[in-house]
Image 1 (cartoon, rainbow, N blue to C red):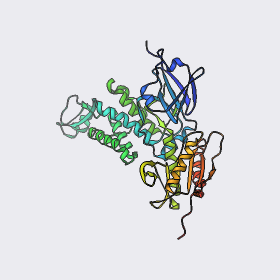
Image 2: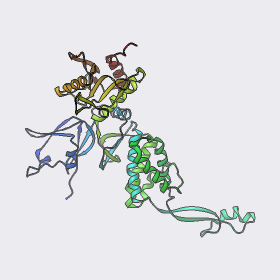
Image 3: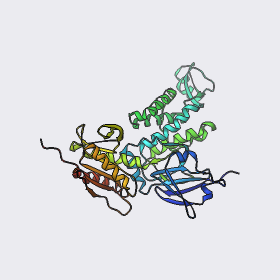
Image 4: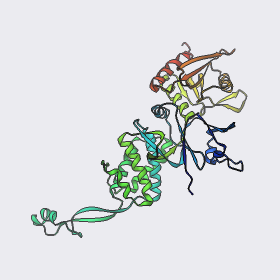
Length: 419
């Protein structure tokens, strides 16, 4: 008998108590899928009355066991997530090998998300082969079977040409209506895909697909063309349906919500890591906001420092490094996507600032619901280094939060030395 799949909605960093029988079998073994455990995004604790589960800093559609799937939704508005993704330059590479159904929403979906989704289905279609079918074509000139007598008389015989004809023929090949639309989709997505190394594989895929469809004439779809996938051969239909639905979302400007809907749109299941998204969002916001001040903001995970002067074994990896020039580090910041900071977080920023010889250290985290966006002073070290905690409000107007973050943190940075 087929298992009944249960979809359970839970907020990111939200908790839910499951009966032990849902997550542990009769022999005491965990029923949580190995691929889900490897993601390390769940906190599971044995409590009175069952097992307490918390989703840690992610949103998306996450299979939990063979019978239970988690639909993890963000605590903040979906439009704010789209903004954070676009500002932070999310590459959408964390894709689970399953298909999930998203519900359409009134908001606008990031174009790069749609481009990644289209390439997901295009890659499958290119591997399996494009649809080949018989399609009608009108041929003028030499005789072909099934002469169209009316057009032949008006165009040729009436003008004294007894040799040429107008014929309706059926040819077998790629130049079918649906492949014409897919080629148009490839060309349109190619115009919006970034020219970066992260997109190199997708660019190569688009070029290969356009090469395969070289003799196909591109055509933009009409209102009735989005059902053409229903006529595609069964073994190829899922790939074409995916490409057509994603292209339809691009053309109509529709959005995608994380609320599960059995009749929703089919897209690759994206698991968004909010810790990475929030960190990139903060870094890019500050980099753009402080550029006019002559301050650069770089990723300390890529530009690592040393914890000790005489030992390179222990690198420091600050999330944000504020610099004037290439080597003059004026401040460091660590970004934590968590509701409450721990002592280890404060000790981490203190050690990084001390080893770098900087004068300012900042911990940045989201403001909890009901809290205001503000700076909190933590204290000062004997080295004359000052430390702060900044809370960013991602619940309301995200654009206003960006502007306020830049305005609030700018005065904390040391002024340039007098010339």
